[in-house]
Length: 479
Image (cartoon, one colour):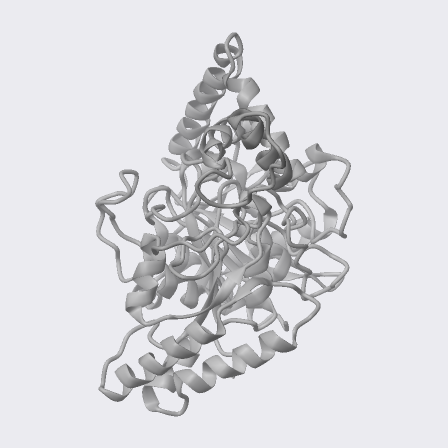
């Protein structure tokens, strides 16, 4: 039963063939037996059984709901009442939030079952989950390789049948890149489609919560449950949430204009990924889509834009962690309050987080803000305008999710730039605030490859529909 999708499990719960408690216990037993992948930082077994028992009572009373009684995982950057939320960092060691973030609260009301908090790069800063202070997660396809990041724990848990589905967060590709590496579906919604209230901030103008699932229908179900305006988040948009899952059956690829950016199929893309993505694109054309070659020259600047703006926002957001009110207190015999805070941060933050804080503080410092931060903001505007103009000519954009398949542990340990370039195809989407999805499109030497589809802002319905039709035509990729 752990191999079921959300919608398959939903059908069995509704007919009484399964109970939520039996389903939850099956996952908890599987999680307890897993000592190798390290997908979870916290396993909330007692809470999960309590939620499952409550869901069974609601089901017995005739209540029905898309997520009622379904066990899922939450990335450990989402504030969850009564459950440790560490962000993969020592600085928040032992921190237990007294409140739920909006997305977590919506799932709790919907009757979802919380199996635990999944592993993440520290404060979601990374592309491999190697930066977690509590140890890395391993890729279920090959344990010598990374699962991607920063939502590597969530993606690996879904791929390894350690949950039915999971939530991740995507600041520069952190849902889509691990989805590609682990052979699952990863959806990054439009910025503002999902409330960020209760998401521990990395870069506030880029962060977005998104689903990691076994198929596209599940992604639609989970997005529908978490999307919508929130008065607690001023960046959430007051837009109606369409019935995404219901709309899948009405979707059609015939007549859709799909753009292929020439810059995304050149140097830096592995031949194995290129061939599988090309085959997926050919499948889209066979289903009736009209392919058009397009150019997105501004995306070549996306990495430098991102690594000025995201660290700048991170340096401001992470200034709140000082060991005074909560989190790690490592200071010994401090000379004063400033020394107390400095010792706590030195012990609490990892190397990558420190690197990004320093990059951001430098970009915002006197004399450099005009040269770096403001120039990067101007370039970001040009990049967004380029996407807007492109979407006047095409309905979707297709390309690779990642330039390669999952790499081995330590492959980029001494080369931060090489690690940053792993997100070359995903970062532009975040800078422009667009929705995008990664869908498995094949195996290269036994490792998953992801096809990325990108839509105009607020067009998740179109995006999911195209991905759904492709997935149905592609057939099963054996996990």
